[in-house]
Amino acid sequence: MTEWFEKFKADFVLNFLDDDHWMWLLEGLGQTLLITFFAVLLGIAIGVVIAIIRSTFDKNRETLKARNRFTYGLLAFFNAICNIYLTVIRGTPVVVQLMIMYFVIFASSTNGTMVAVLAFGINSGAYVAEIFRSGIMAIDKGQFEAGRSLGFNYIQTMIYIVVPQMFKVVLPTLCNEFIVLLKETSIAGYVGIEDLTKAGDLIRGRTFSAFMPLIAVAIIYLAIVMLFTWLVGKLERRLRNSDH
Image 1: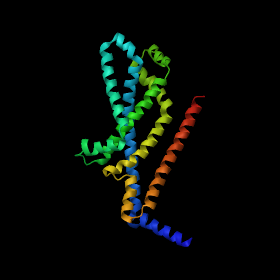
Image 2 (image 1 turned 90 degrees about the horizontal axis):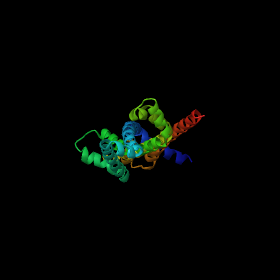
Image 3 (image 1 turned 30 degrees about the horizontal axis):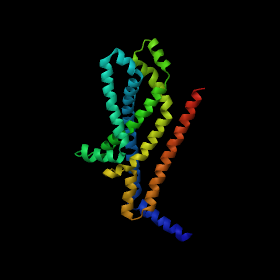
C-alpha cells in the first residue's frame, strides 16, 4: 500500500507540480470557458434570426402568397438560405468545420481563439435555431392574435409577446445544448488551440505519463458538466413552479 502511495505521489508531482504543469490545465480551462461563452452568444444570435425567418415563413406562407408576392418571394429566398445553412452545418462534423475555418477561410489569421469561437458559434447556431423554431411554433396562435388586437404589427408581436414566451419553453433544452457545446470545444486542439484537453495532452507529451493528466482533464470536464446540469435542474424546477 505504501509503495502504491509513493508511486502515486511521484506521478502527481511529475505531472502537475514539476515546472508548474498545473498552470497549463488552469490556462486551458480558461481558454475552454472563453471559447464556450462567446460561441454561446454567437449561437443564440444566429439561432434567433434563423428561427424567426423560418417560423415566420411557415406560419404566414399561404397568407403572404395570396396578398403580397414580393414579401413572399423575399421571405422564401431567406428561408431557402437558412435551410441550406442548417443542412450543411448539421450534416458535417464540427471538427471538419473547425479545420476549414482555421486552415482555409481564416488561414492568414493568428487569432486561433477567434476562429474557434466563430466555428463553434456557427455550428451551435444551427441547433439553437431549430430549438428556437420549435419553441415559436409551440406558442398558441391566439398569442399572435392578441398582439394584433393590441395594435402590434407582426415584428412587434414576435419581440414583445412570442419570443419571451418561447425562451421560457426552450430554456432547459437550450442549456443542455450549451453543455454539449462545452464538451465539443475539446476538439479545439486539432488546430493548435491550447484548451483544457490540449493542456492535458501537452503534459502527457512532457512527462510520457498518459493516465494522470488525461484523467485530470476528464474529471474537470465532469465537474463542470455536473455543475451546469445541477443549475439547469434548479432552473427547470423554478420554471415549473412559476407555472402554478
